[in-house]
Image 1 (spheres, rainbow, N blue to C red):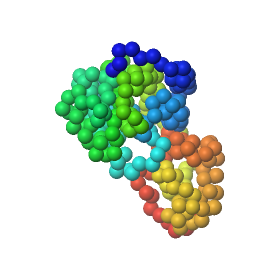
Image 2: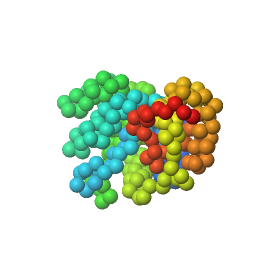
Image 3: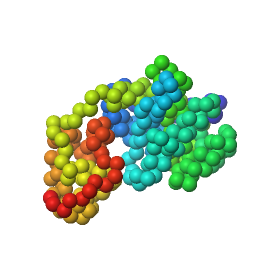
Image 4: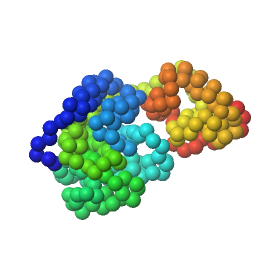
Length: 261
């Protein structure tokens, strides 16, 4: 890492906005929007994986955040709770590797294990990974992996993540508490058709594309979405997906397709 890092005026503004906005994060929807807004402005990336470990070193909470569409199998290989790449990176780094760590083709990996994990990330389509995490604290430890920054990693990228680490850690603790609380199922259960539509919205499909998949019109899909927005208390597709993430309503695989509207 560079010995002296001086932030530009724009970087200072991005950092201040990120810190100010994070104070208001209390639920997954807000964290998702923050990660795709203020955090992206300072540290642009393709995927953020957040992990929390309890006092017994067990993974107690994990979250995978991204705005572009990723194949479900790729998400599992990167962010799976059992043996995903991010979990293995975290376990290795928490055994004593220096953090923050930058895995990038432009620099040698700190050790052989990280070099192998870096090669795996590259085979999965990510040329770099930026890593940081806390020590074991009273409320547990947290770990963060940013995959796919659009440039060669620099010391200032690690510095930004280090400045944001306390904010990320506290936000993740709030999200873990929210996940442990009884789920808010909303004013009514979602129908099978609504679950289908939400799945394909998350996969980045347009209304017309979803209609073709489900055998209904794009207008019917739009009408379903308008009703869903009212049910979920949101105003657009991005907010709907974030809300469904908070409520754990998203299906992990394509729901069975029934050909009736």
